[in-house]
Structure formats: structure tokens, C-alpha cells
Length: 188
Image (tube, rainbow, N blue to C red; front, side, top):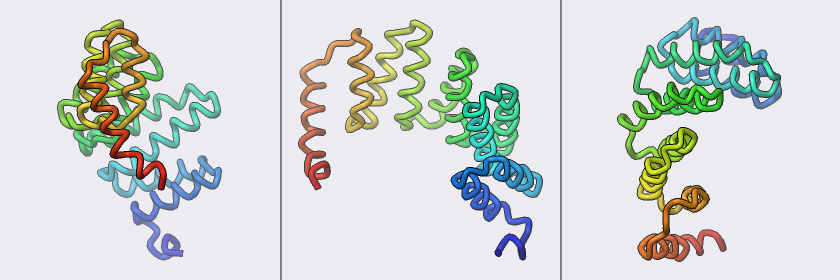
């Protein structure tokens, strides 16, 4: 009802597009989001959402031709805000998925320079380093992610799965400390 009265509210359009996506109408979501960025081209969240819906359509529908549209949307949003953390992370991940590892690495490095406390970015960066055979750097990136968030068990697992880095006594103690502090939450 609100959008029938205030037709060009990009925030409301983003909400409507999210609802359309969740209800299984990605085509409608794309139309709404395209209109929303026409109304306000500086609204990075709408560009990112458009890129995410397009990416989902590309993956689910095996529509490789949409990948260029994904990057066009991400790049438009990043022109409005070159430091938008979520857009940088998504762009780096999509680049890695399509095996453009060098481009992915450059975006990850920008992201981590701007947001060095982003543990998921360090984990994804470690994956990319491992793909390139830069195992020592991958171990360091996983360890950086662990230092930021030692409670993320997946990071410990990924580090162990490399089978290249020994766990030190301090590592075991850190994991046990996390388990002790996390158990009441797990039980509750």
C-alpha cells in the first residue's frame, strides 16, 4: 500500500524486492530493484541486492549470461561507495566462484586493507590463497581469522584440513577455552 502512494521510495522498494525474492518471484524482484537504482543510483544496498538476485538466478537457472549483469550492478554500487564492505566481499566471492582468482585476490586485498577485522573475508581469502598454492599465506590468513574470532569452529577445521600447520599447545588451550565458555549457550 505504501508503494502505491509513494512510488519511488528506494528503501521500500528494496523491502518489496526482498519479499518478492523470498516468495519465489525473482523476476519481479529484479524489476523492482532496477527501478529503485534508477530512482536513487547512489543507494548501494539496492545495487548489492540486485547483484545478489541476479547471481542467484545465474546459479539456479544456469544462466551464465547474467554474470556480466552481476558485476555491472556491483560496480555501479561500488562507484557510489568504493568502501562498501558487503559489496566488496560479495564481488570477491563471485570472482573466486568463476575462477577469476587474480581479480578476486585484488578485491580481497582491498577489502582486508579497509576492514582488517572481517573474519569471514580472511577465511575466503585463505581459500583463494590455497587455490593458488600459496599454502603458507593461507595458513597465516586462517590464523588471522582465528585471532579475530576463535569461537568459529569452521576456521579451526579448515586450518586442520590443510594438514600443513601443526596445532600448538596454545591453540589447543584456546579451543578448550572457547568450548568452556560456549557450552552453557550450547546446552540452553
